[in-house]
Image 1 (tube, rainbow, N blue to C red):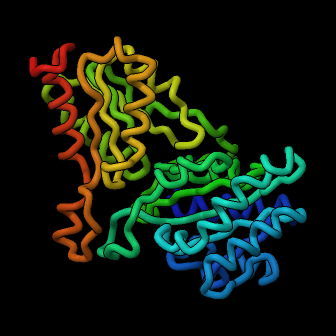
Image 2 (cartoon, one colour):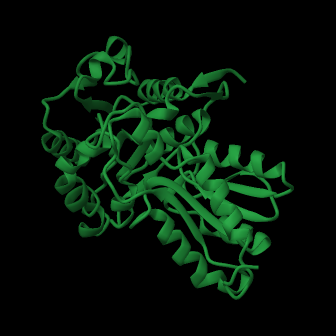
Image 3 (tube, rainbow, N blue to C red):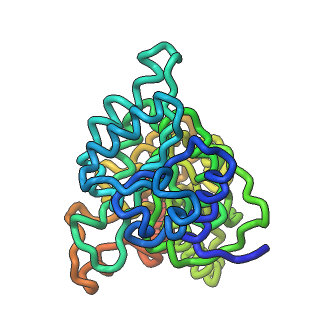
Length: 331
C-alpha cells in the first residue's frame, strides 16, 4: 500500500468525498489557501471558492452558518484552526447542533463535521496547545473522533462526513507529518470500534491520539525487561468501544490510560470509572492515568517537553501498575 502523511490522508479523504457528493462544502478561515497547516491545499482550485469558502474570523458565526446549512441539505465541513478557538463556537455546537435531532423528534438532521487540530507540539503556547476532548464527551448528541494513524484519519473522516449528525474530528498537529500506509481505496471506518495496536498479556494501555505511538514505543522498551503490554487505540471517544477495553483488562488485570490532556477531568478518569464499574473483580490493582499536569502549556520548547506526557510517563505508570497486588498494596 502507498504511504501517505497523516495530513495528506486527510486531504485525500476530503477530495474523494467532495467528488462523490456535491452537497459537501468546506468552511473556515483561509481554507482556500490550505488553512494553517495545508490540509485543504488545492481543494479550492479543484472545486471552486463556492464549495471551499473562506470565512470571517468569527468561529461563532462560522459554526452558526454551518449548522444552518446542514439543516437545509448541505454537508458542511468546518475547519477550526486550533481547538482552543472552538470555545468561541460552543453555543452553536453544544446547544444547537448536538440537540436539534433529539429536540425535533428525529425530524432534523445536522450532518456537520468539525475538524479541529490541537495538542502539544511546536511551542505554540497556552492558547494553541490544549486537548479539550473531555469537554465534548459530556455532550449527548456529539460524536468525538481522535485518529492516531494516517489510515484511520482518512477512513474515520469519511465516516464523519457521511454521518447525519455532528462529529468533532480531532487532529493532533504533531501527527500531521507522520507517515503510514493508506490503501488504494479508502474505506470508511465504523465508529465505536477500537484497534488493538499491539497484543500483550501483562497490562493494558489505552492510548489516545498522539499517545498511541508513545505507548507502542513504551511497550517495546518494556518488552526488553520481559513485560508484555497490550496497546489499544480507541479511535473514537464517543462512541467508546468499552467492550474491547474490558476484554483486554480481563486478560491482563491491569489498566493504564494515557492521554495528552491534563489528567484532572480527562477521559482517563471516565474510562477508569467505566472499567471498574463492570470489571472491578478482574483488576489486580488500581487503574492508573497518564496525562499532563494541571497547568497551562508553556511556549518554551524546554518547558513544553517537560510538560507533555510521553514514553517515560507510560513506562513508569505500567511499572507502578505491575507493582500492585489485588488488595491495592505494593506487591
